[in-house]
Image 1 (cartoon, rainbow, N blue to C red):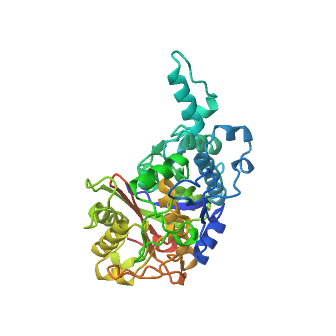
Image 2 (cartoon, one colour):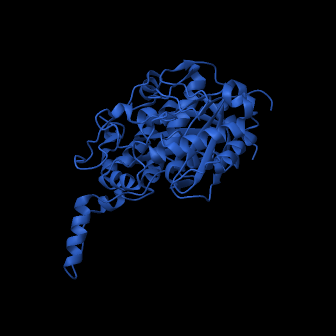
Image 3 (cartoon, rainbow, N blue to C red):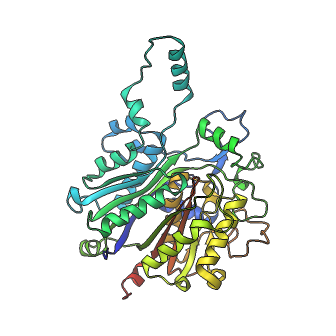
Length: 422
């Protein structure tokens, strides 16, 4: 596995922007996309806020708009982000179809209340068949986003679907990296999409006690990673998708290389389904593995794009893990959480963190952690409170940790440094 992997394009549909550059501008400006829920009537729910995408219509990016009828809200975000990423990478038509693959992290589709009512009515009457349009069945398919991206992007190589909750896009990107390293593909469209701003998901996470209930009257202040008053996460939605390529092939075709995806680590805590282990758990192994594979020393890391959910347990566990992996150098590193502005984009979260890391390297600017007003005395790293900072970023870690105990970490390096011998 000696092939280097170049990142040549990114596409985004997020609560703070419907493309990459508007998303990045909002993150740097510290602009929140958390607001009152509009995807359903949440007026009677204990939680009535989320990070929501506004004003996006995937049909505006599709040549054949008929495809849209098969796409769920989540899949539409994913297809839109993928098409932007391919355009930014100037990758349409690059390589043979069987040398191009897709790897997407997402959640399974959820039924609407009307679907459940129809099913309940059918159950009450013996022999009654629940009839739904075939397009509705396809919309709930877990692989619909990946398969549609493959279709519109002309990818006939490996197709990978990952559903590991909040780590999904990190693992989708990591597995895409492996396909390129092993020579199974020269180009992979990889990332994640999700839209858990549904009645069922908001209710479910509320019943788990995972969502904050304290800021319904001030939604933009609700997501506050690493702050002493953090009390739970905020759901978000959207998609971030990247184009990964074999390094030499990308150089040969003159692709715009934004970064090298240099390392990937994945572990499992085997602890509790919904809690991060207080000792840092498997996050330590995931980060250390990513750095080791990339040949990146801890002292070369300038930024950690943190999972940073705004829950008491995760933020403490992640801080400890960063210290364990980076040692004393951890206090010289910028650590920030994009979730403070978008909410938790679940299966797409690591994709957003990758965007923040790669563009920080490009522009020499680290986006802030919003709402970090009262530092937690137990958390003592530089979390870039409330305002972006200008600083060069040579290499960065991208973190994602999930319900179920899954951990994923990606190591990325500035492209000019990737040209130096390792």
